[in-house]
Image (cartoon, rainbow, N blue to C red; front, top):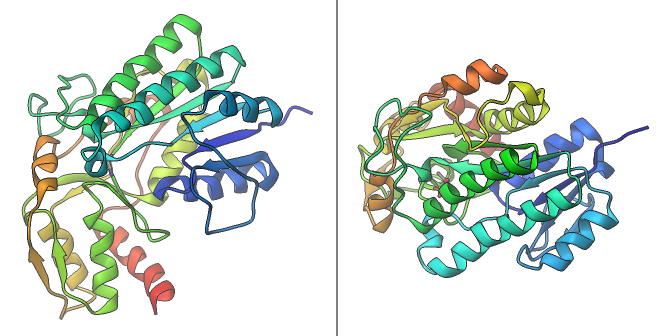
Amino acid sequence: MYQEKILITGANGQLGRVLAAGLREKYGKEQVLATDIREPDFDNAPFEFLDILNKKRVTEIIKDHGITQIYHLAAILSASGEWDPKKTWNVNLNALLNILTIADEMDIKRFFFPSTIAVFGKTTPRVNTPQDCPLLPETVYGMSKTTGEFWCNYFNQRYKLDVRSVRYPGIIGHQSLPEGGTTDYAVEIFHAAIKGEKYECFLGPDTRLPMMYIEDAIRATIELMDGPSENISVRTSYNLAAMSFSPREIYEEIKQHYPDFQIDYKPDFRQQIAESWTESIDDSRAREDWNWNHRYDLKAMVADMIKHLRLKLN
Ligand code: AKB
């Protein structure tokens, strides 16, 4: 009987660990191989160390485990990417090119590439950003993801590799604290509120960005990968949206649960990155092609985050 065998790279990150759990629920624990450069701290399911720049090891793992689908999540995010731009390019783009090439050579059935709102720049329409629009990213992370989208499209057009991708907004989840991103404040703020601490926000109060609850992000990923190939009309990356809010707006919503919660705004270098992105996204192509629909708005997301984090932190 044919069984999918799934490889996740960068599986210890904010998305990876929740995606691995979701895919294990769907395909069975042994069918999903998590890999990362860091040891996992969360479960004892199949795991291998993998430096994504080690092409030989990537090939061996795919071969040894009989991999049929790849979710290539390994990447350095927008804020930490600026500390070492060349390393970021190497990890985010050169490693992608390697694994796309291997995927094509080894007949991988489906390949997932996570893109991001960081592909947008100051020439992109800021409100209701369309699917097809000018991309002039200002971070090396955004540059690598934009170029990555073009390579994914190229591998699909030229070699018929079934590559699928979404442009994730900032992701909010209770499972872990994200590291190195510009949207990380939207998770950190919950930890401060629940611990009874004042939160110092590294973005200004009115910086609105597209955001999504992790439950929606994981469901979107699995639904996109499940859909029939002929429905997938975008092979660069789909715009994907759920909600948009500013630090002030999420603070006000959290205050409904924690009336004494306090916040200070001390914008740092991440403010400039956030300002180069857009505010809200038109994701109608995803909604038309594979019936994407978000479930969580700001209110529902805040209530669910608090419910889960209260149990975890208290
Ligand atoms: C980041 O802030 O770098 C990421 C992203 C929006 O891709 N969360």
